[in-house]
Length: 635
Ligand code: NAD
Image 1 (cartoon, rainbow, N blue to C red):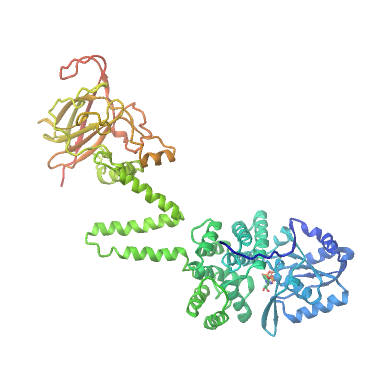
Image 2 (cartoon, rainbow, N blue to C red; image 1 turned 90 degrees about the horizontal axis):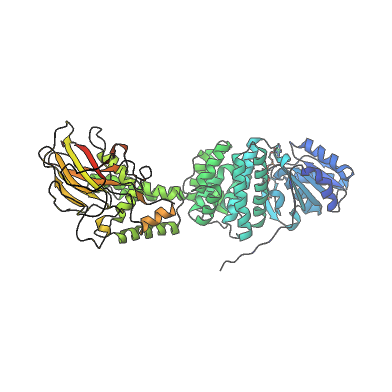
């Protein structure tokens, strides 16, 4: 049974475009009347506008906030706060300005109204990090949480693109680590996934108003996750890199996140699966890396100014203080992570690279296959099967369904029913193999698929025989010739023919029929000719009461084959020809369910009346098929 604890942070959120205009109302709503305005470094003009809107509620101004909230700056701001008799602060800026507001609030109890201009998320957390004498300490206190946050899309839209990218990835990191936090709970999970979706969408459309709105919405939710649950390796590592090596906050988050995710991927597979799903991809760490590259964000700690010589010390510091994290924290592991992040490599260790290793392992087992061709086929098959699973993010249930389907396909096979051939036919595989193996010589008759109804050892019949054995149907007189590619007749060729009856059934589908019918083995005469009588074949559904039929129905496909006669021609010194002749004008020629129709094989079955050429009287119409098969010689 799932167990969790969830504490909601009591913040008031005002979200929208142009919401900055409501700042005076929000201050008044808190019952405050003297606001100290804190404006970030690049936001002086916005600070002026805020003062203007506040009018008499504005009591003073301090614009000196700095990264990592140095205590000496807080002391200066505190003096201004006291001087002005302010009872609240209104902060306009990024995490640094918010940090200063929090530092003032925790010391004096003043209320805070925060207007975030970045996506850092600090405005919705009860956490404050401060630096004194170069040491950063973090504390959490409900008094630190700002009372009101005004998110104005227009304000954050002013954030220059490079800052927007790194700040958004900083937010993404909160949401990702929330999913594998020891305090994870359904409320936070829901917010985290929604945040990831919005942040990814925003990062892909950075230059549009919609994209910026997505980022701000994602930032709010991600910040809320950060304020609700504990973070893991990624945040601690960034803290170390920022605190001890002076690396910039958001860019460091941007470089480290894909690598921290890859490090945790195997230990937090469900969280990674959910992140990947929210990103619309199969592997979360590499997808985040690619997202950053596409958005033009930094990818290496080297470019942020970390010296290679500092990597070892960074690993020592990172492993120094243990904290909860899905994957065990080892010095070697962290050193490897940091080295890859320093060099800007695409991350390794995610699900996909685990699978890559697995695939390579399986492929290696075929290295000793004695039959070289078999070895080559298996070596190629395995990576393709694995890639199919990865690309489609195959679930266990889908895999099981596939196994069940194949099991039923095998169980449906009997001496007279070949469900696997049917499956191959309806997937077009038989035609692909046919094209590859049989149809590469333009001067021979095109081949066609064997189909599932061929039966070995058909009855030997003499020239002129009636293969239909008197079954009802439109009489058919067949007069075909077999030649080589130089038009020389091939005498004594063994020709197997088989076809459906007028209702579209083969004998093997009709258990009441006595013995083989509508199939036989005949031989060409000295002139390469072969004549026999039969009935006109009709279109027919392939057997669709088995698993293959189920597949066709699931896909909304019909099961019909266009009407045709099958031929298999063997002659010493010649290549075997397996083919079909299709009845011109027949149904389903353009949607044959096994993809077997080739234009050159669609021929006239000419309507005639009167006696057939062998002198047999026929009442009514009959059809005549004349055709010359050209077969290739071997060697
Ligand atoms: P920041 O506030 O330092 O801003 C980065 C830079 O962007 C600054 O130069 C700033 O002047 C500029 N800037 C901000 N908004 C701008 C805009 N709209 N247009 C032009 N320039 C703009 O950086 P940040 O990434 O927002 O925040 C980082 C700080 O916040 C760090 O000190 C970090 O520790 C802290 N933080 C704290 C928490 C928390 O919960 N306590 C959470 C996240 C971040």
